[in-house]
Image (tube, rainbow, N blue to C red; front, side):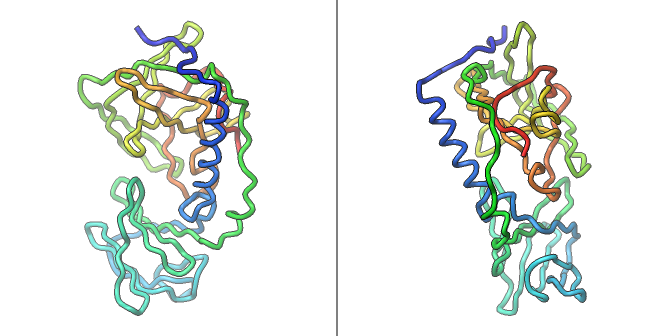
Length: 266
């Protein structure tokens, strides 16, 4: 049987903990590697490219100097940038793409289904300083749910669409199950962040009160249970920029009822 959709581990400081989480969330958004300062995303194949803002470059940016340097991308996806003092590698980053800071620009070499793309962030972007925050629903302990955490008999491949229209495939290893108002609910974690399952969801508030494409939710696994705290449901990167390749929810994660918890539309 699945676990009921009832509050779990409710503490008097739940609202304070959620507020602290939200402050960290806003700090991450406005950070240099956040989602408010993306300026460019350029798909490319392995090769050497002159990079910069001027029209005579192979890859033309919308920000930065006229001639930033020479970008080299290997067939294995390793990237180097030579700004005149020798090639510098894009450094690996946990749970993120390799990156390199070049002056006021933060460059990332992304890869999605074998397609490489250079992503550029402007560390001086005014949106970072001018961001006013995100509206949220009041914290509701009812939406902090204990669900059963069930391992599948074997991993299953699942096709996932993205906001940019690029189809992807993920491996599903677990599912979360609970009941809501007598209805059985099964959510699939399609991605993992820092070792924690991430659920991409849509509900009856989507496109009306909350961001239309989806919201994300990070689960907390506790043995054969997983805590789904929808008070921490948050907008995906594509709510802030058209340059993000956000996954869309699988069909089973599109819920017919309203989840009035977590972040509202930006």
